Structure formats: C-alpha cells, structure tokens
Length: 398
Image (cartoon, rainbow, N blue to C red; front, side):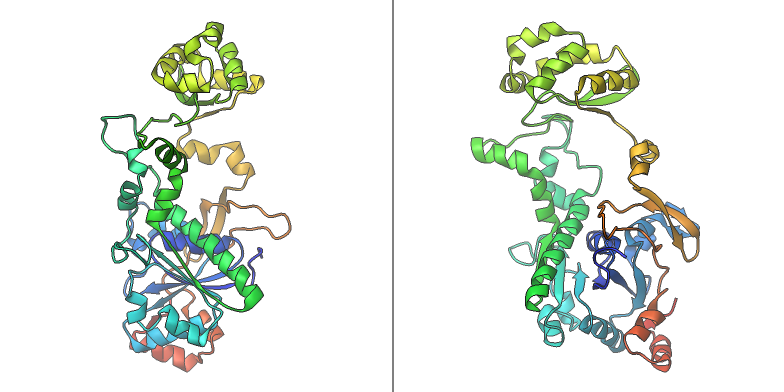
C-alpha cells in the first residue's frame, strides 16, 4: 500500500517533469489519477519509436502506477469533471504555462474556495515569478541556462554538452514531490493547503552546488572537466585494457592505497601529488601519470584489486549492463508490471525503500481513458451522466 496510501492526487501534467512528480507519489502509495487531454492524450504517447505492442515505451515508463482518465478541457463538461475531482483531492500537480489553469477556471485561488486543504503543485520552465515566468520549459534550455552545460563535457574549447539524461525534468519532478510532501505535512497539522512552485531552471541550478561554491569563493566560473571532480583528485574515469573504470581515490589514505595497487609507489613521493590541493593544481599531469598503469589490466582485474585494497571504484556500464547488474536486481530496480493490453511489461522499480510501508510498482500505465468511467463513478457521477459526457466528447471511455 505504501506510506501515502489514501492520498488523492490529480495529475494535470504531461511529458516528463509533472509525470515524474506523480510517479514518485504513486510509487509511495498515493492514488494518482492522470488527466489526459483530448484528443490524443499525453504527448509522450507519440514519443515513438520505441513501441511495445503499439504502446509508447516512454509513456509506459513515466505513467505506471497511475489511473488514467481522458477529458476535453475545452468543453464545459470536461472542466466540470476536473473541478469535481479537485474538490475531493489532496494534491493537484500541473505543468501548463502560466495562466492556462486560470483561463480554464482551475487556478489555485478558484479551487481553494471549494477545497481549502488542496496542495497545488506547479512545475514550469522557470517558476511562476520573475522575468522568465511566461516562458515554456524544456530540459535542453534549462540545462544551458542553469550553467550545467558549461561544466559538462571533455574540457575547455570543446562544444557544450548536455547531461545525457533529461536531468532538469527528472529533478524538477523529484523536487516537486518533496515540496508536495512538505506542504501535506503542514496541512495535516493545520488543515490548510498551499501552492508549491518549482521549475526546471532551479532543478538545474541545484546540481551546481560544488561549482557555485567555487565561483562564489573565487569569482571564477569553473569549466568542464570530463569525468573529473572539481574539488578532489583522482576522482574520474580511466581507460583500462578492455573498457573504462571510475576510480575515486580522493582522500589521502585512498590515494596512497591507489599508488600501491597500481604499482607506482614513486607517485606517493612526487611533490606534484603530495596532497589533494597539489593534485588538483597538477590534474593533467596526474591523469597522465595514472593512465598508462591503469591500461595494463582489464576492468575486472582492477575492480578485484581495488576492492581488496578498499579503494572506491566501479565500472562504466551501459544501460543494458546496468539492467543486468546484480545490485540493480537485488534492489528491485528492474521489475515487471501488468499492463491492460500487453500483459507483463518490464519497467524500473521504486527507488525509495521503506521497512514498514514499502513502496512498489503494482499497476501498468493506463491506456487512454482506461479508468474514466471508474473515476467518475467514484466522484458521484451516475452511469447516464457518464454516458452523456462521453457522447458530448467531454470525456473518453477507454
């Protein structure tokens, strides 16, 4: 059931940041009802290829554990349906542009009159205040403007590189879920809801804690370092005889262990590498000194030797290798779930483990309108009313 069992969430969100928030809450047991637009539903239904049996793999990943209804918010009947859902909800998550919900009659000030305890979560590109509040939100744009692309890549003078994953979308969803839970804790104490406002821009900024600390201390913005760390060395990827390995020998004890494992004891007495500050000043020379010995053995050989010596290290895995890794499987981070059309499909598992009220993945992503009738019944609609709304095109009965 999860720790959030009984929490009613309405997700008026599409593509990624908002659905990530809903996903986090659903994995923890909340009843998340995803409201998809008509016609067509969430745009991620058209993020193909890849498809699984005609269903978008991207949509299925982001929307498992949710119930889904399909509503045309351009109709009076569709807006009335959503307003009734929100009157009985604990949380609403939306990621429309500023002003859209107000134009639909679903803004916070309007909804709180019917439901003063409602936690109203808004996820946008740049937040609901400030000179960029009206701009749309896209991960690539947020990565560039948050500074992330200035510190990602192989080094100075090379083209800017974004983080491979849509990190601002995902992080904004996680921050939103954190904000929702904080607001809900306060509501349990006071009965009062509130607005929760976060953005892709801020989600990118929070990943610059180390680099922002450097800039604020030195007034010099740091640049890209490949896989290296801006404050510790050696702490990066090295090529082995058959692949790549990350080595994290950042403190002095691990540095001395590393030179022993690599059989280069002379580096321990080299004044260029005497301590972390010296190693950071001489990082190119350090990398050059370590690169040749690391290439002498395979990744597996080094992992065994480094682990035995207590030096933090790990292989650089591709996604398929990560899926097959025994730790991934032991932590149930790859699991199967029942889909209404496809039967058992694979998906990622819940990333937070709780001992008394475990999180879990119990429901496949909905087909378009799959739960419309069910959810409307729960909210007091008679069968005739539901059929009338469907005939009018206000809702879709999957």
